[in-house]
Length: 206
Length: 304
Figure 1 (cartoon, each protein chain N blue to C red):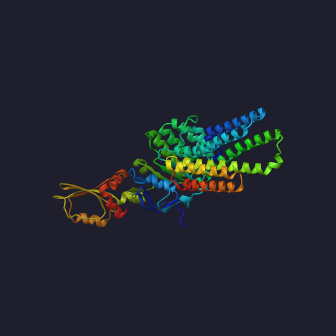
Figure 2 (figure 1 turned 180 degrees about the vertical axis):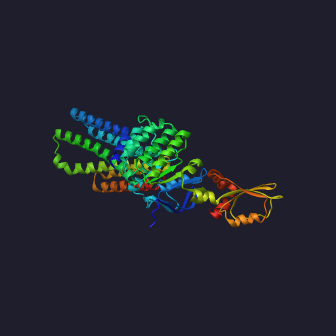
Figure 3 (figure 1 turned 30 degrees about the vertical axis):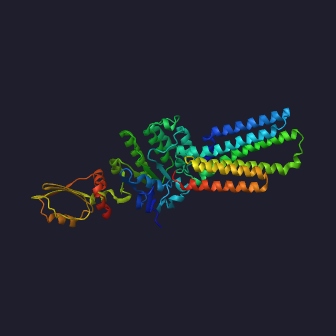
């Protein structure tokens, strides 16, 4: 399993570098705007960088699946001492690790800035946890859509349908806010996407 | 319980409504070198891919090392070496990286043997796979498949693109080692001389069906090509079952018959031929006769 996860990281290095660069850039902007005390900057940065991050995670999933299909990576891997389920599990685990690392780094930055500004963090602990959980799950949902898109990239209609569905889910989160129903919805959406990817990946010819 | 390393039961595969495999039932005994023959598009690669779980069957099932191919465990995969047609390696990888990946995903890796193979083949490990010639890719694929000490080795047209010397080297190396260890090999090739040299048993696929499945000796015994010369012209009423091919010109008739037996010989003798001589047949001759479009019905009925 470790070999498979390491392969995922190495094969998608460009995506990882982009995500890392995005995180560093976001952190730098957040620190600068906090230092200069620019009003509304925090929200604006959060929205813009959030959208870029969602696109990056979708791209990561799509690239992982697309490069596999284009280079017929799994048709070689599936003849070695592993199974299709393990190959996919390693892929998803690698993606989840990238998402968590990126978002934890951003969370630490946000908490550090808030502490510097003497915000009552203890008071907002549960809110921060809910927001973080929702952001992680939204990112993971975007990543799952990317996995689906990467595997069915040739078909335009399913791809557009999936993007529309993803936009709908993100909008629902925006409308509902960072609350439990949104979390449940995101979990259901991600599980459905993963189940579909798993079914396609384990039953299709490689 | 049947412990043959490869079992196919009533295997059917359709592609876009076209039947590629039509009820194949086959067993490859342990320790056997099985040559799977067939013309282009006869379904050899599809069958091999189904065996490895790379392709789902439409109907029927296949067992590899006693496990269903569609649910092969990692352990079973680790006991099977596979050299794919066209050598399905990750083209963008460097050879060294591909080796590390295959080694990391193996249950057992024979470093000494792999090193010897790399030395023999003189493969450059710092080059990308796509920069290697077809022959080098074939050699690399074989080396990777053999390094895991496979219990079952599946070779799908492995010598495609190799020059004569490399082909001979490839075959000798593969066969000597595997045979010495009593491993099983399923070997598909268009180079029938190679198959004849190494296979114990052959199967011929024709239009999605196995029309021949027996040992090489049996096949040569059963399929006979006769040159019969009659005193006058060739009789019109010479009927016999399982005629694969028949060509007549004047007094001479060239007859290829499946399941040759004394009864069939007696039928010919009733026409009092001036001479009846057997024409020696190589595996290639038998294959060409068996896969001739006109001979297909006769063989499908009889199943040599």
